[in-house]
Length: 304
Image (cartoon, rainbow, N blue to C red; front, side):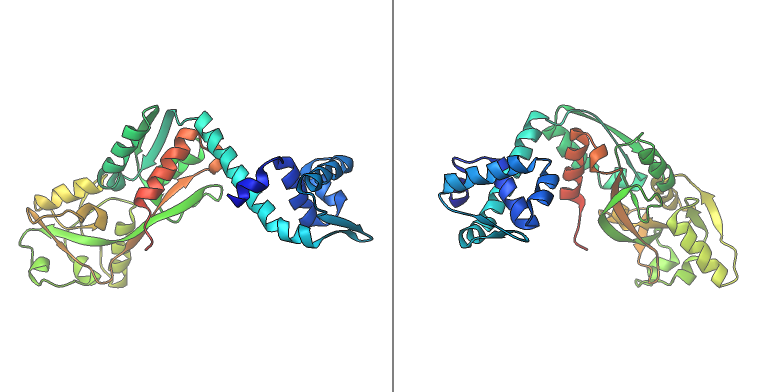
């Protein structure tokens, strides 16, 4: 209520003029930063002082100085400017409701296991936005968002293109998935990565998990025993269920795992991945893309 009282009878330009002059302490610099002439700046401050009935600033040989009244009023003026700015942005958002096409690219494991509920809720709330979901591996996603083919992507860090902005969503471990009754599951305890590399493996070429497995093999002077290469993590899981081999899968795919045709085993020194929301910057996003970005961050971002 006190801020609303301050704003009554005066305008945003007057408040901004006073705050800028109080911070910069010279009419020349304050006028330059506001894009005003010095006489216009002076008139705005005088009008504010007349409205308040108090002298806020005095001229000195070195610029301007705040009076006692000006010093007391400055924090309230800053609050009032911020309230008016936020209100203006909210009205602007209302006048530009999220609508139109929005393209989001995701890793297959994220699209299948993290997004169905989130995107379902988004579509229900923002009925004027038309979503397109693209699934691809990290390198392809980064290229597509950098070139403007996608508005947003959910991928793993690090991001290699410096022009892209990334906001971390979560970090997770990889866990070993083996056919039911497999010897590595019978021990009922975490296994070492050195034990995993001796098994017939199902891998996605170029993935973080495959890189870690190859490094572990090289450390032991062994060759990686790849029984099958597939394009997607879900295919790895299905092949494990059929007894083709074992696979390292991200934890998100195993969150709702129930004992069936395969079992899950913890790996003591296994790989981890950090998943992030990536885009070309706020200025590149449409209102629809901004709405989706906020929605995803609210529902998927963790504090871990």
